[in-house]
Image (cartoon, rainbow, N blue to C red):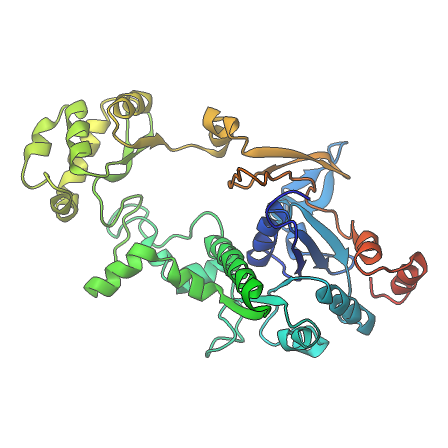
Length: 407
């Protein structure tokens, strides 16, 4: 195995997105990640289609694109944890792993003897990361939590969407499950911090991570705006609460993103747009003034940007070092020469589809290059391999486990 985490083994008991996303990052970084799934059905997201991965004949496989997005690099093992034999197998795997990821409801694994306290009893060095909607404590701890509701409860939807009084006004959900994804990334950083602590002390620990906590934490400057001013931020559409102009603006043939970051850039933009007098107006000369005068300034900017096509603006502004960019559809994203040159799409061998494309991890290490050996696995693809190589089970023992319904 390549990658900086090739010395680590991860037991991934999680499903859907937050936990699996963390598991995929660990796998990308070289860790051996064993994904435990329900026999016959597997992770719920295998069925969250269409679209589904096509086989070599062009027919749908059982695996949805959603599942493919978060499970690259893992080994799929099917175990029925409701059986005593299945629970024993999980304990045997946990004894040989450094990290356990799980996202069952609070207390859900305790009845199977698979909670942190139970596993710590025989593997005190284990790093056990529990991901839930609301955490292990608090009045909501037993409530289910899903990304869309967390975006609403955690304040993100209140600051996302078209401003009141404009067409299409109202709160909006972000187009991908960002609360789940950010929780997965916090899980990665937390687990790696715990790995460093274990290297220093020999002690493992339990990590309690909640989607709602994560969503509140990464409100970032918007949260600090509220804590500093006591005022709820307004929805700004594509605009920025602290910088103006910093939003999508119309052109003759569509829209482009204008991201003016300082007063000098604003002057250069105004000169190119033929409205140099706006930059000289004290009401707009500084960013602080522009934020206050946003409602008066933006219509003047939009009137100017409508005079030329987007390509003209992107060329002229880029040459003048005024930050701007296109608003690409996904076909345009993956056709972009920068995206292609960086190799952001990888292709791997797949037992059902022949080949499968996924989006590569954005991290590039100078000394421990990532190799992406394992495509998102089909259900139970590695069950016998893991039981044989990790647990030392014989063919006869594996056959008996199948007969007993544990696999």
